[in-house]
Length: 242
Image (cartoon, rainbow, N blue to C red; front, side, top):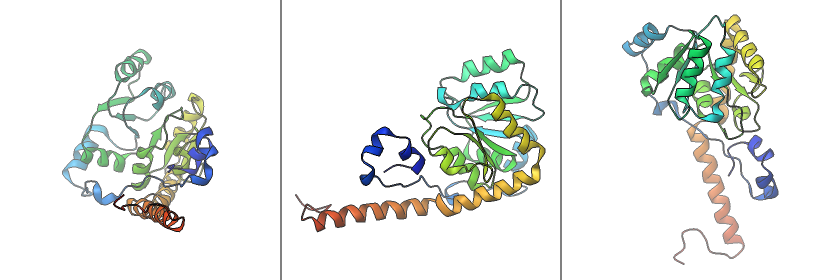
């Protein structure tokens, strides 16, 4: 099972066994996340701490996430980026931000789910600059789409471009390109109405393809297909005593 047609198409190994591959995208459900009151204390506290209309990255700070590219892109930007999460490259990223004199980047460290959902609610868009195919899917993009936010990601031949459709749910940029990433953020910053439209389209795509219910149904279909194929060929059925 591959999590996107994009990943299958760019995998030399999986393509050799294409007839055996099913596509089942990862799915999540809003009910499994904390609910926020529109004027509740968590949302108010996060807005007091960070403001609103910032760009948001959420994830483990790993080498392939492309955050060093994001920091370069933030030089002179008239808006803020929040980086929520921690990880192996955090110290070098903090040093890079310090050396660049970036006062528009906030390292938030690990945040609780309530705070994370408040950040999604308050942000202008989700920025996900992973520039290597090691980023196979991108659950943060799903969370952003679920929250109705426009997305920015890079074309790495994986599930990120299955979630995010260029110029529809957000922008898909050239991997590793500071200029391309900055231009995408500038567009969303300068055009809040367009950002809202893209966010609604991201939410619609999420509901159509990426809920946990859809994922569960698709896996059940895969299991039933294997079971019926084994029965048809006189082989051991799943769950038999042998």
